[in-house]
Length: 91
Image (tube, rainbow, N blue to C red; front, top):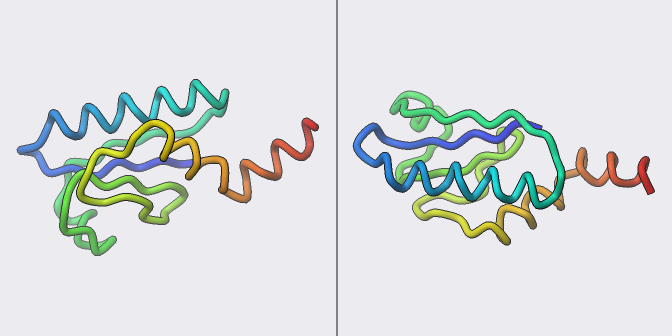
C-alpha cells in the first residue's frame, strides 16, 4: 500500500499533522505501507489537487483541503481491496 501526502512548501504544520495521523492509523491497524510526503506543486497539478493538505491512498485522492482524523484514515485503509485481501488470508 502506498500513501502520499501532498503539501505546499509554506504549510509545514498541516502536513506534519497529517503525517502523524497517518502513522497513528497505520500502527492502530498494524498495516505496513509506504508513506511519502511531497512538497511539489507539479505533483499537485498532475493529480488535480488545488487545496492542501491532500491524502492519496494507492494513487486515489481521499481527502483534500483539511487534516483527516485518525478514524477517517483507518476507514480509508480498511476499505482498500488489498487490505481486505490480506485480512481474508489471515482469518
